[in-house]
Length: 132
Image (cartoon, rainbow, N blue to C red; front, side, top):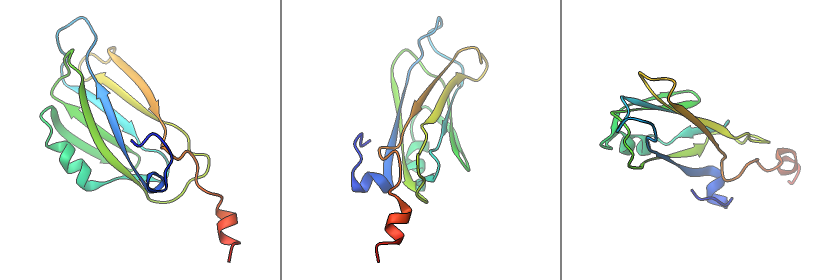
């Protein structure tokens, strides 16, 4: 969010992850969501603190290019997890970032998706530098 590239979305946007369990059992064991970050983006710390307060979130880890959520479980009911990302430095030709969701004890139960930053590529840096 937002889905369109606006001036503010270039520097900051929210990643909304929707997850639910669709397997044979009524719920998963502990579930893990690994959300890679687009190049040049970092998570907003205050949004991570809000995320940690959510009922299903057991703990949260932040590596250089990834946010990992440890969830108590997932049921057939959809759950949403949101955090914000801000641009640390512009990157040209920004690639989509993968998100992986899996059951910690039943790793065969997994799914993957991709998301893109609302502004897929940075403005041409050369043009900006030569405009003075």
